[in-house]
Amino acid sequence: MSLYSGFLTKVVAPNLKYGGVTFWEKYRLLEKTQWMTKEELARIQWEKLKAVIAHAYDNVPYYRNLFKSNGLRPSDITSPEDMQKLPITTKEDFRKNFPENVTAKNIDKKSWVLNSTSGSTGSPFEFIIDHNLIEAERATLLRGYAWAGLGFGGKFVTIWGSHKESLSRRLFERFIKRRLMLSAFGLDDESMTEYVRVIRRYKPRAIEAYASAIIKLSEFILEEKVDDVSVNSVITSAENLIASHRSTLESALNCEVFDRYGSREFGAVAHECEKHEGLHVNMENFFVEFVGEDGKLVDKKSGRMIVTSFDNLAMPFIRYETGDLGTPTDKECSCGRKLPLLERIDGRVTDFIHVSSRKVSFLFFNYFFEGYGKLVKEFQVIQKRRDLIQVLIVPSKSFKKTTSESIKQGLEKNLGESIRITVDLVDDIALDKSGKRPIVKSEI
Image (cartoon, rainbow, N blue to C red; front, side, top):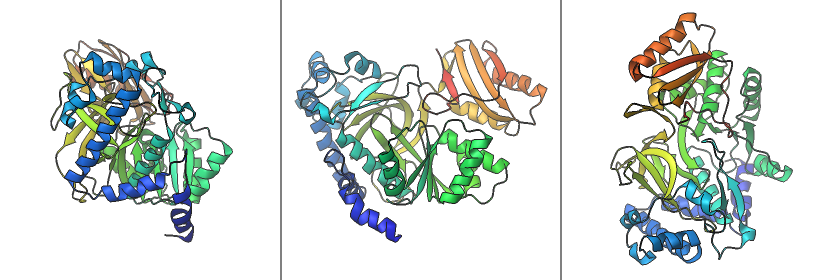
């Protein structure tokens, strides 16, 4: 540890507070709890779960009405399994009741922070967070960074979406957090050349990025045969990461890759550790359920991720439908941490194409286009109607006239000839409002 990093860790970090709350105290506690037994962790989670349920019932009109309409009181939730007695809540439920009915009456509005999702599914979602959640999120992020070998005060680069910030915030990011922010928008050859130059000069220990952004930059590095850019770790988030992506990142940046799953609504839910055997769920801050289409719990198979967050008292999220799919596992990580494992993130509910009576995952299209690796720079699959799929292709120099027909025929063979497929060549594929570039989009 450098003298500067030591100063930040021992002197600055413990005294950084937002709204009277210090993330450092929360982080130090998370450092201890990660090594606790299953039973100890379960007790911590259950106490926090009971507390947020009682708080929501007493202070949030929406939840009080939800309990009453289902003939329930908080005392009826006597174990984590009883959470299934409560209905799943959705963004639409919050939209209809925002802000008066979904915010806590006992929390001072001066502590409220208005936030919103990007609206990549078509409609932005506004919500309220509080200082306690912000600092809890910082603490869980810092623990994930530590698993990736990045301590507080270690230099890193973040390639993310829009991030307009005040001068004071930029100074904090650069000299205290030691993070250099780069935009995920407009990643053309000129900007990527500049990003390579910036990374060389800044010499970060890690890069944190949207998966699509860092993959595109890595592909550029490999294509241009840039051999003097490397970092210890790459932390990907916000989009799905598959095995071939890992290989690309490792080859381009000579790094170790760590995946993270989180949500704008409540922060980092799960993070991969140094053993890379899955993503550890931050159960000290969240209660995560996996349910099927019928709303019942699933075991060791892909399910809809339903999250209860313990830290946002201003606007609690209880049994919240994230719109994401994941596969849980009962395996234990060889790292020794007893935090439960998420085997993988399977994508968003919208990351599927509906064909007749079956759903086709974005993973199918990833594997399909691996066969066109040298011909296709980028692709995106858009379901316009049940019987119409548009495929956008950014062709490479090796792309041939016959390639479009080959792609069309190959997809028809796999998806069925009843599906009409169009293949359109484009110069670039637009990012969504947040700076992400989904592989699959469903407009139905």
